[in-house]
Image 1 (cartoon, rainbow, N blue to C red):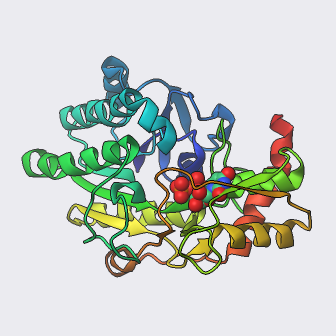
Image 2 (cartoon, protein in one colour):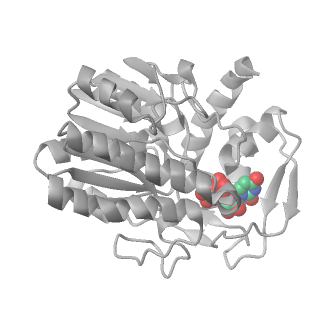
Length: 326
Ligand code: UDP
């Protein structure tokens, strides 16, 4: 099976490329390396290019007869999206439409799209299932929601089947320590806490300890990156077996607070972690937890690496490895 992975040099994409290679797929990564890393592509070919470059995409689709496209390439920082929305609409929307256009031209019918819990906006109830209203509150969430909305039209007109996977908080790393999160700048809680443990960062700042939660800090649904990739693999089987276009929420079903993450990191690493407290971060809901019943029922997906200590342990192994990139 020939699979195109756009954004295969990034955090989740690189884990996916490795998994697909291990399953015997012929994988081609297309990535502009703006935030991804060439040395994270551990299987198949890496083609450096931008999704805005239609001739380059046509060449690629001409060269390989892709059975499916997985699309991880996007800008992901909520705060940045508020100040620089044009980048988000250009990259996450216009460039994705460009990719879809070339898929239509080459009659590639299977599309798996990285979407996000940010398409829901402020939760009206938790856990959040697929029926929850989608009212994104920032350009990042809106950019993903826009693509979710056009895909049914591509299905209707061109027969393109798609699965949108809405990630909650992707976390963890390849259990063997070969891959992990390497964002620049890093904004995610678990890698930042572990950088505070390893000494690469002085401390961790907790954004708000006055939320309406048991310990006052925000609750998130941290889902192991390997479990996320497994969901993509199952989504691919689902589409290849004639499944209809669907959207799924992916989380591990339990929430952990910021304080629980820090306490777990202290226990896993055995290191002291200096904690400071700051005001709430704009746009952070108190609690975001996924209801993944549909992914379980329709894709047969079930997360396995659900223990916070396991997620943190794998991310810690990676944090210790990454000193080699400094
Ligand atoms: N957070 C924090 N300090 C940080 C980074 C994040 O307290 O330096 C909190 C953030 O406010 C949120 C949770 O950790 O409640 C997860 O944030 P992250 O940026 O990892 O993911 P998000 O939920 O925004 O997608």
